[in-house]
Image (cartoon, rainbow over the protein chains, first blue to last red):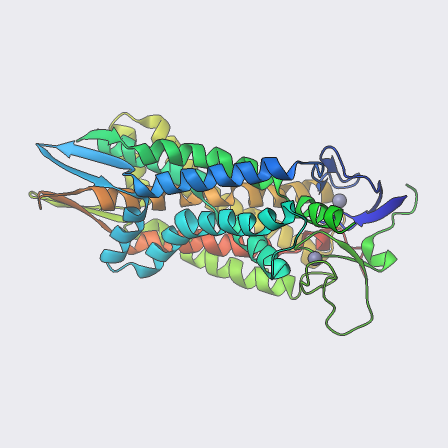
Length: 201
Length: 204
Ligand SMILES: [Zn+2]
Ligand SMILES: [Zn+2]
């Protein structure tokens, strides 16, 4: 048994085995990514998603950084970054920051849990196809790792004139960044539908 | 492989949402049997859309660099900062690795991104067959590095949230930051509307 797939980057047709690919393969002509590994464990993906949810909660509940200068101090949370822009009348920019650092990661984690938890018990979530397409649309807009580097830049700039105290959320945000990267690579579209089809069979 | 068979020549369509390979159906608006997304042999109006978005991004790149992104008020004075002057301030205050980081992410990357998209767009318009692999790689690099330009927008949003010390000092956002965010979003959408398979399609 074999199947034909086409390269998403150059449209070249490739003959592949029907078994799930164990590693990533690249296109013979353009070198683009053809397939990711599709033999992942659904429980591992769910565990990653749950840890991501916990880390996400921590990142939002606790202050990100605090500064102290001349006896007065001020702290901000992740939401505070977007809120500060909003209060100054920059609604568009505030929405962009809010969406890329809070809404998009949250939607990715929750929609994955919504899809994977029933699938683990051989059921399919209602509206599975719509939620899946929502998930693939949201994924490119998760900017947590860029935000972390931006936070680093802000900390260095502030350290010049105030005492900077990193908060709990800064560390959980850094862990969230790695967890989300691992989660995304383990729940590629090919992998997700492989799980669905394995359970239908 | 001797004769290169492509999805197009075999009548196969790739679903870009779920990566299913689907036999092209003879209906007007085919949908993917697996995830129900709309199927197109190539992204619709790819070149026109990418060109339009890229033009907007190139125009906004100018105010993004010229308008202040941040105002710093203290009791004594008010300072305006563009991205570039912010980089210079950091350079003089001795944190040169951060200055280089911001310079690369905010000024070099968006410019490289716009130029790279112009190159791949131009070769797709012309249907040029040379350096296809390199152009494909260039396009993939654009997708990979694009998001990092948001760096300074996040840094500014944190400064705004933190620096409000008893009316002694405060930081306000400038419109340059919005232009900057728009450049990042527009170039990302432009890269996504571009269909890289057009670089490889044989001339009609
Ligand atoms: Zn290829
Ligand atoms: Zn599909």
